[in-house]
Image (tube, rainbow, N blue to C red; front, top):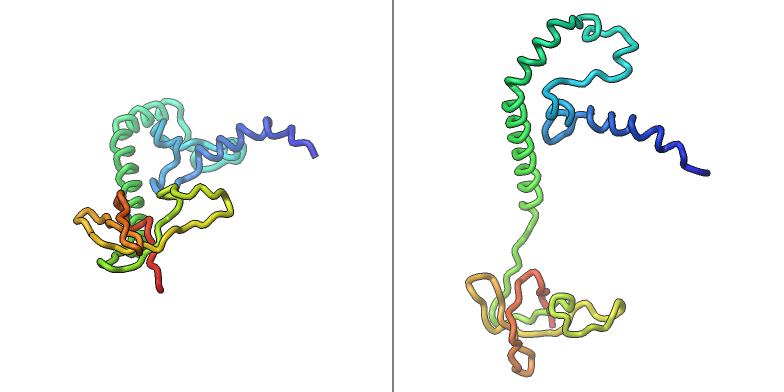
Length: 165
């Protein structure tokens, strides 16, 4: 099966993309650029209220009036987009739990974060266990090996996993 007809279908797909309402702005990209709604090809062949009420002189005047409100139209779409983004972030952020460790806890360190052991694809993902010996106010942890050797760098909680021994 050869897909050579996609070139013929591409303009229709792009037109559909530009004239479909987006969820976050509740506007079409066409209306945000040109300030008016697009007339789809089906509407030209089928008599609709929009096509029947078209008067060339009035249409030009309405388009010029719409240009005055175009900036406000875009600002409202940007506000709706920001509100939608904030709601989505709130939905996902309420499920995030911060990891906290106490001094003396045993933890595993992410091997990808430290790159201490480059054992390839089938190697261990975690190294350790290590003991937490210090906590800074920025949320980083100072670790030491179980034998007492101090690890030189500090670690964020996202690169650590609790070790139950």
